[in-house]
Amino acid sequence: MKHRRRAAATAAAILALTYGLLASQSQAIAAEKPEELTIAKLPAYSPHRVFVTDVSFGSMTDARVHVFDADAGRFLGQIDAGFAPGFAVSPDHKTSYVATTYFARGGHGERTDVVEIIDNTTLDVTGEIVIPPKHAQAVPTPYNTTLSVDGSRLYVSNITPSTSVTVIDTATKKVLSEIDTDACVLAYPSGNDRFTSLCESGKALTVKLDTAGKEASRQLSEAFIDVDHDPAFVNGVRNGQGYVFTTFNGNVRSADFSGDKAVFGESWSLVGAADRKAGWRPGGLQQTALHAKNHRLYVAMHQGADGSHKDPATEIWVFDTESKKRVARWKLAKQKIDPFLSIEVSADEKPLLYGLTPTSDLVVMDAATGKLRHVSKQLGTTSTLIVNP
Image 1 (spheres, rainbow, N blue to C red):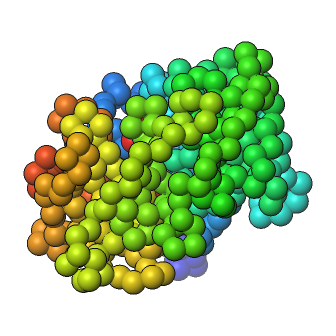
Image 2 (cartoon, one colour):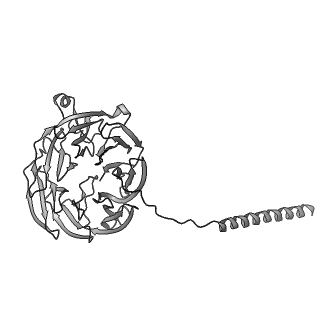
């Protein structure tokens, strides 16, 4: 009997303690204000803001674009980008465009292709434009989704495997036309009413558009690329209304796409006889960067042979585009920097050079001296492209 009374008293004490704890917790919860979720705005736009398109081969349907502040060495946020996206930033830097694909069942099912419109102050999706379900699903390049100079027209490259370009009015958010490009690929804009595509023959096709965004005329150039003996990288660099292309063997040729028919400059070489004998050549995914005002061409270089054009760079070579002479040679290993797959340079008065390594480290260097500023480790998974508007 005594044991029962003791057990009952113990149980009552435990219940009282439990109720007391619950009551105090309830009072504490009641005193706390519910958390309110808000969307913070990004800092004011800086010419040293970097966009890195990250396409993970472990999750092909879940790409993203990382946004990074190169001055502060700080990750700012990310843009969801669907499957094998194309990416472009408006001339005023306020808006980004992501051309992508979604499947109803994740990796399969009904396909929908869209251009998503991103507010660059919040990284929110503010709208979308449904486009023909044929946008090019490939390793990202600056030229599979591009804008006219004034940003009024967006060009989305298509491959089914037939090739074409979808023309979109960014103001009305309407598809204006689809231009058959006769087996020529990508869209290199010039001005506001034309773009050029590169052809498997080594020629360039320039398409002029009318005020309604329909094809007005087209002109095919002579071959300016020797596709059999010295192919060119498609990731040429913009130089005003023209472009500068680099070949697998280290030759450079300018292209002016501003007229009805493409016009090309004389070819010149990045490598002298000794460097060529030693196997120096461009390589990687985004091999060149140009600071037009300073007349500086940056080239990601490695020692290789035929077929090594995708190998990452162990050195950055800097050229004066007026004299066509090398003015600097930066050995990455000297600063304990891993090889680069992609490079880009900012366009401002105090430019920074950006490099992306095979392990997706984002490296920031002074573009005048080559001195390392900082490294952000593994910004993406298998990031393949740096975009710097």
